Length: 225
Ligand code: 13P
Image (tube, rainbow, N blue to C red; front, side):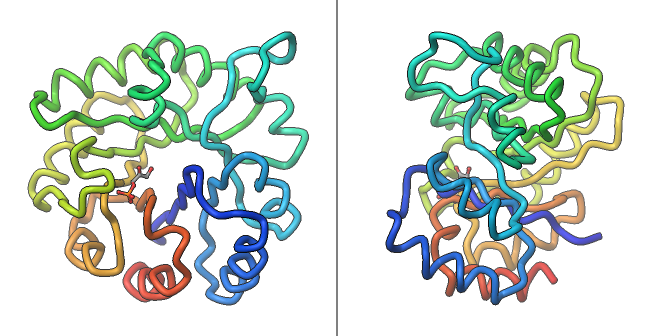
């Protein structure tokens, strides 16, 4: 099955860089799901990329300065949302309860959700991930995609062993009663992906740092196709 390649730009690239990036991305035929900085999203939608937002709010509209609703996103042609990224959990103190509300409203608005989970360096993965999934998906029956991103692997250049990735993904699958797709994220680049791609339970990748480099994406395309 074709691997999902999701590109999390985080808060990177400016308008000028974006023009060349989009032209080049079109040429490499990667068929990614792109999660650009929110103000860049319309450019990807216009160019027919599968486009997502990196974050979403849990109200349809109202006095919530700085937030974007699932309803607004849907109207714009956004198809996906990332919810519960570790940077949101850490830097913006997002709780599992808030994450749950965001996922519910996103699904009600027919957006596809990628829920990010993962343990920190000193944490037991089972305890953390079980909680993130049980609380994050409480009273939710529609399937979501999960992205397993060990926090210590994000931006560090260090990746878990294939064994660890397989064990954790199998654990995640055991917590959910549908055929869940699980992406791996954390220091995925054109080199590390060669080894990770041997793990057959990985449905795809959520790529941060390398996602803005066309050179990297060209090589990644060769590995996943
Ligand atoms: P890096 O690929 O830069 O480690 O980031 C991973 C990530 O956070 C993707 O959501």
